[in-house]
Image 1: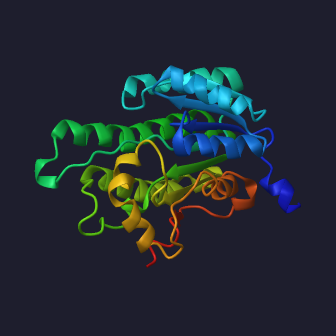
Image 2 (image 1 turned 90 degrees about the vertical axis):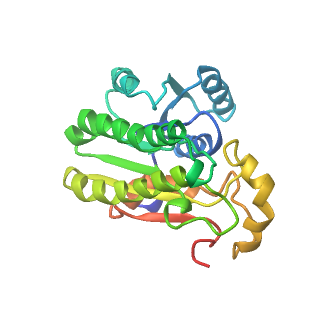
Length: 258
């Protein structure tokens, strides 16, 4: 089989959580360009509508599924609606996430719970529902979790204080490894990407404060841009990566290696 055929996603059904903006929308663009049929979920219906309009200008259609993944009771109906439309899910991109900045000693409990509920529990429940109702019965699946280099190490001294975010992204790293080990027998691969700093709504405030330090500490001396996640996600979602599972790939300009 040719490499082009291995990378082709035509006929595959892909669900992107947090797909209405930022990294999620960039990932959706890539999967759509490679031929996948897209479904996007996010909390705000109006942002999903904007994402659909944006994608349509690139000749990519997307099915919008408003859903707050921090509310467990909303997840099964969302997955059911998706399966009712397409019958299966071949690719799951777990991108939805939140952060909170505060010193550990003053970190509010409600903020901790908000981050954990979305970044870990919501990801688990979406993955469980998609796996049980589609990927395991069909003996096929490509799961890509969007972790972070913040889940690979502590933050550099004097930069950010985001304990809940780092903790949940570290949890997502081992969620990836453990699930890959468990679901490999069903023909499902589970991998994660660990982005460094990319300009987005969530990172905007942090980059205003420490952007120059981040660039200076990166071997490539640049931030990630809107193209830099597309290739690796398209690869991991495709059959070209069918022998790759349980892996965490940093996309950070070399920052985590330096």
